[in-house]
Image (cartoon, rainbow, N blue to C red; front, top):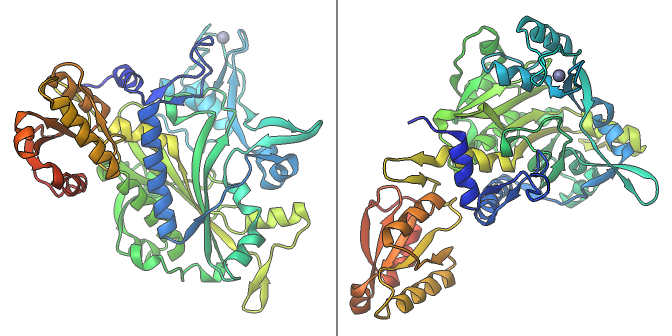
Length: 496
Ligand SMILES: [Zn+2]
């Protein structure tokens, strides 16, 4: 059955995952801003925590920096003036479009990554693209600044951060002391960033306010083949879609072991390859289907001029094609050198007696994209029901508790079971409304993996039925054994 995006989006709205654009009651909201409802927020938190734990397990510590920084910071980072989107305008009615999105919106098969502005205009002309509203000719593509401006105090010009990374680099000297003057070390931030997109689209995939989880590894250039995380990932096999493969028009990526990718110089260092490995592990931990994933290398003209290499992990959406979930970047020594220059501070540190500016390797995730893509992947329509097959460990509510009948002390017993599970730190919720079949459907649509039903037998022998969302099969379990049973069921160790 072909899925429809509208059906998907309306389910996510109805079940309290994604609302908006916000604020909905004022003129239908502003494009690029969304509310996460109760279940959306719980899922968001699980996604964020999965990324967070993985970073921490690979020796990245979390920090928190301000969202607003003075103008000078953004001049140093290159965002002011250099951080732009390709914008095209109708010469008659003045409608504005983002050139690349306009092209791919009308011609999904067209490749627009890495094109110059002139090449955009050539494509617009070749494809005969006109204004969508009045069918008149479009102007030339021009750069549009994406920074959101604000004022500190009376007149100090400042900007909301367009990424967390820059604000992570600034306390570099503090990290150096915290990590007892030993490189490499890693730091990350999980927090908001803002981009004044021209035409934000595709729901949570491209918004004006979003959360990033960006990890930065500070490492000396000469040590890039000596990072300890490498040993964990050298045998990992990734679906790599190099520039070379893309350029030859061979549409298929190749499965490559990371150790071979480093040996063949497809990836330039072991530390960088390990960052790809960490990125991949996170995406798998979140429950993404490996068959819909690929790492796509940026073309040299697509990545920042200072970057040595850049790969995106992309997931294939039924509605939007390949969507970037994260980028892995070798940023060289550019950032710290820029901030040293603009701040007048020496950001070199000692490496074997010589002063040196370290390199930075970055893993950059967008959290809301992960939330949307995971929801899309898990959405399933069957003959009888719509079901959100979220991996049990990611589902906002793990267990629904139902009384089979609303009499004979069955509801009281069911409430008791709910309390017991809450006390055991499970996300459990009681539902006694409507037929039992309806309650199952509601739980299926919300993505809740397990439903417990309390019936007359429960009153006799303290056993309940546990129903599995995916197989719809039931098993009878003693209440006292529920915590262990559910934990095993969440990790997939129970065969329903
Ligand atoms: Zn027009």
